[in-house]
Image (tube, rainbow, N blue to C red; front, side, top):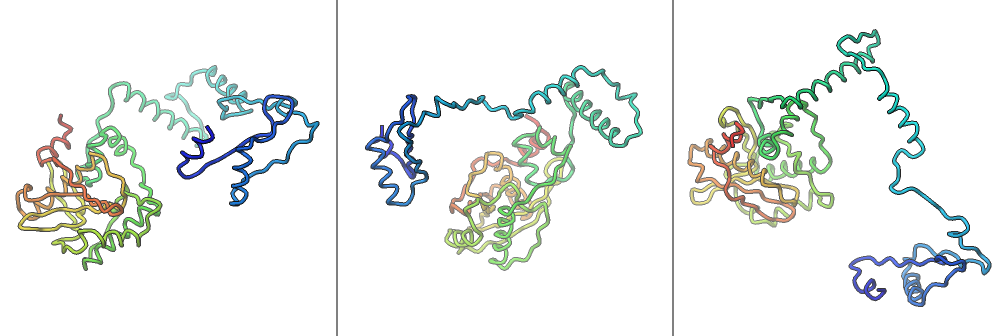
Length: 322
């Protein structure tokens, strides 16, 4: 087994031994381990070297064994206190919140929260609540609708602020650099930032620039960069921003730059379908003359999704028709 361990380790090999086993006397390391330790010491990578026990030392595993409970109880010594409080709640008299009155503002806020949670539970048990789509949508909302309509409905009902970390900010900086590279001058607003496409930790802005400049797209001249659009699809107005559009022999290709190398799921192709339709409407041409693709900048790959949704299929998506 030692041979297998030494020869199969891909990057790291950890070798351990112990002075004590199950017997009352300590046991010297094997010759194989001694050789491994010698190599480790010469390389300066040995982590611990416990002193040899005295001849009359007792096995601590037998003399003073350590015990524990597995799996670990996350509450530890607070378990009894926690269970006592649970029992107190379970044995408490039921309070009719509709008749509850108190002058304490904080207690009244707890009551309001409890009423809201009870009401939400009743709605879920009765078959749910219909959440109407806003009359104006971003392309990312359309992607979310295709991916998980229920999650989107919950987000619309209880909107939460979208965090922007250093990687998404770097991705935004890359898009701005692309603009300047092509001498474009447009402005971003919050809805245009791609929060779904954070940069991977080992990527830097300068590395992204260098990788993009080495791609097939860098020497080509786009016909448009950072194109804002608003287009009507069925019952709603969809807004977004197209990163770049290229033309060749009367055929247009819409490109969306992705600063992460992880391939996006099938629902993300909805974004390309909207961009293709929006550009076709802007130019007054048949959508068949427009293709669309994601270009993953870190890997240099261009993903041209097949079978993009047509306008009719996008309308069905917005109306949640099968």
